[in-house]
Image 1 (cartoon, rainbow, N blue to C red):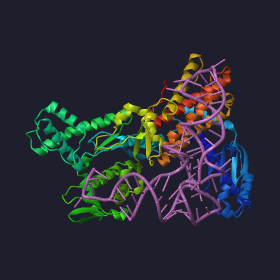
Image 2 (image 1 turned 60 degrees about the vertical axis):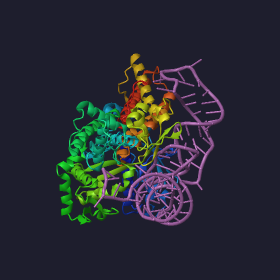
Image 3 (image 1 turned 60 degrees about the horizontal axis):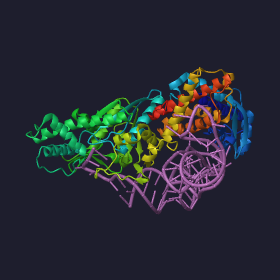
Image 4 (image 1 turned 45 degrees about the vertical axis):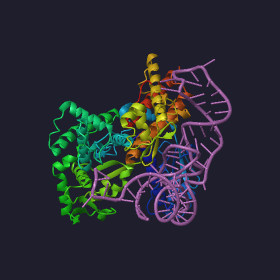
Length: 561
RNA sequence: GCGCUCGUAGCUCAGGGGAUAGAGUGACGGUUUCCGAGGCCGGUGGUCGCAGGUUCGAAUCCUGCCGGGCGCACCA
């Protein structure tokens, strides 16, 4: 538990003790302590911490909140709490002021824990899987995939920081109709390249990249597939193309700073009989029935709007069947929590997927689906129209070479997934403080610059100063910075609990603002050795927290810019 | 039509049932010989889509309506 958590927890406990004590001597009546909060008030004038305990007790105690607050305060044991004063304010809040010296204790904590500072244990080693991107291997990654990649990867990093054992997984949709169409398209392109006048399939993949793939095949294997029987030809072509496409996706994600623990093939579920086995299990449980020649899952039993087809009339299992098998497999592998990141265009599938998990006998809440809205690209102040049909869309590769991985990742993570974002390409590219990613990276570079100068002047920026020296960090700017640093572990806990990495991006922005404010008001490399030592420790710690937070976001913390 | 989701400052967005709803940006005014000017400080800017309800207290929870996005295949 972090320093700040401990302080809050301690005071929270003392508040509970205070009301129990008051009840014991008859000054306060209540049955049980209702849920109450102890939190930082928005306004600094209300002190460091505030509690609504008196207000939530009004109903049971049948007294005015201010009276109750008065009783609580007179029964409060402030020993060892850092509390210097309590006052009743507004409708009945109890506001506490803390001895600001507690803040300086955060510095030794950061220095000692270094890159582990912020790591918390709420996950307790629980196995969590995050599945994200899982783009069709028939083409290139687009902006939606980019958002999913940034979000999924930092969510995974966040959960790891919170003490979960995290596995990142990419589900390869290498089976089904789309692959069949992919094969037909490849076949057509292949024959066309070799001079045959064959029509292009209606539902085919029109991307230029397909022609490139086919050219490579011809380069390596010539026209040997022409004379083959169609099915075999398509299989060989598709096998080659899939390998190439998946390798390309892997490489692009790698450039984006994303790497997976597992690449899971949908086809493997069919090949191993796992899909059939899963259908059988559902059948045994009585959740399957036949209608119009197809097999249906009674998904309405579990909150779906309508039952779903699981095996088509032609005997081929649907995508949904494979997906159920896949999720069964996830839980069979021992993940107690499974998180999927999906585009909002799939939100209609959430209920049925959760229903399927329940039908399999697992708690549907152990599957969490994070939906993310679409990305609108803005260039020159206008929306860039994107459509796959016209072939006019920006790929992740292009995005990385345009604005860089750091800016792209930061922009995506900054927003709540559930809001449509406007991605301003010009802003993301700009190298100014208007650009949030530069603003935070610049802070880190500036910190490194000060540390470099300190070293050149022969000062040691790594030491942990003693209490007397740390007490010199008493300005408002220093305290604000220390406070934010002390908040970091708590931010990790909250963000991890809510599965919201954008909170960390917000945190980094706020932290950068506080650092720049400090920097502009006070010098670090001053003549007074005690103050200088204390401030060097402050900025070393600040740098460390930046590095740790940016690490979760997958954004580099540069030493120079 | 049914379902999901979003609606907060001119713009882009934060906001864990709490006190006077915040940040960035734009526009305006001021300031800057200084560890990185790739600045800094300041005031301005709001019927939190609308109407009810729950609550001591609602941007937040519930219901209805309006508006945007998305979904409603034996596609994935």
